[in-house]
Image 1 (cartoon, protein in one colour):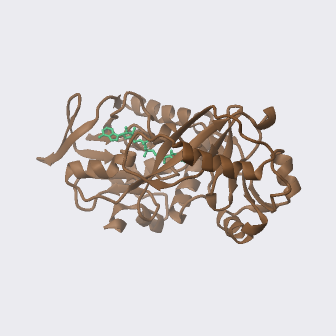
Image 2 (image 1 turned 30 degrees about the vertical axis):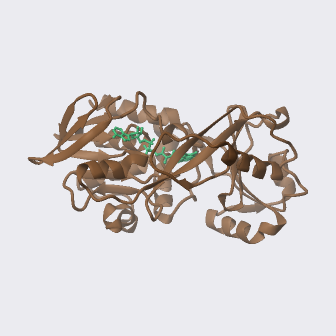
Image 3 (image 1 turned 90 degrees about the horizontal axis):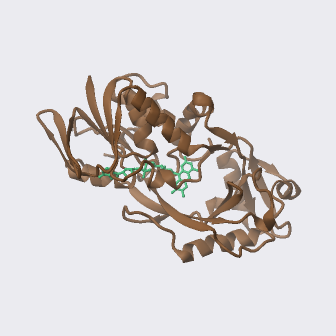
Length: 358
Ligand SMILES: Cc1cc2nc3c(=O)[nH]c(=O)nc-3n(C[C@H](O)[C@H](O)[C@H](O)COP(=O)(O)OP(=O)(O)OC[C@H]3O[C@@H](n4cnc5c(N)ncnc54)[C@H](O)[C@@H]3O)c2cc1C
């Protein structure tokens, strides 16, 4: 049986590991003490099928059934709204077309989110199909599938070196040495660093920081049924979260891979944009954090065997789509490893394979 080592215990590594474990002996190696410590523990946990490049949208669509039905389903209704001022009509119309939203009246938008400022809001678009993903349970579900298939997950195993020798990959972590036929690079923001350790050419995957503040529900309102709402052009957003509201400046600053945190100025920018669109003031933050969204130059995932390095498999560049694409991305990685036909259209597979970037 093929032996596989998956580097990275975020959603990308866990979904690939679960899918591979049906036909391979799989071990996940995670450098941190816990799974999902980096980007996967810091997301907004939404699936919007019309979000992302065409090949990303194809992965979103191909993932929905799994997300809806597997293990009782991981999705709950949320809805997504885009809000524009009088000066933003052109950008609003672009968003409406790109995301397939329905234009709704200002009254209707204020009915859904009563704190919106009707004097400032001029345009609103809505998509009911956007849904919350139970991201913790999804990661646990993939981990359980992996273990049921005989796979293993090891934490505190930061990979320090890897080399291809006698048709095997040899890895050294902080804790021990490992050997396998194939290596899956699911190291998120560190994916190019892992390639560098292996002597494989990088894919120019760049981490971009995104920050988040949690604030009390405005005016003590019950926010649980509010949609997620965005400024045009993804300039900021807010989303209900366990009785509170998350507010993000939707920042996208390119950074080196690191344990990300939110800067006060960045958070303040997001809060100011949010306050311009609502009738309430933010008086305190409950907490804040940031995570890294790591994109290839074409903002599309990089999935499948490296064209030049035998047994070196990419599962990287998940950007802002790692959860909504995970079931289909994990399936595609397994299909490409075992040379099986994919259920995805050939042009989508070609747009996702590493070859396109070389
Ligand atoms: C603020 C924010 C909001 C988001 N909102 C959404 C959303 O609504 N919907 C959505 O689908 N996506 C969203 N995303 C994107 C999503 O979170 C990411 O695409 C996804 O988590 C990436 O998963 P990953 O497994 O590739 O990366 P990570 O979760 O970062 O996992 C990579 C892992 O590799 C490990 N690693 C790195 N180097 C080594 C090494 N040398 N040895 C061992 N292990 C190593 C790291 O410790 C890490 O745990 C959001 C992201 C952010 C930051």
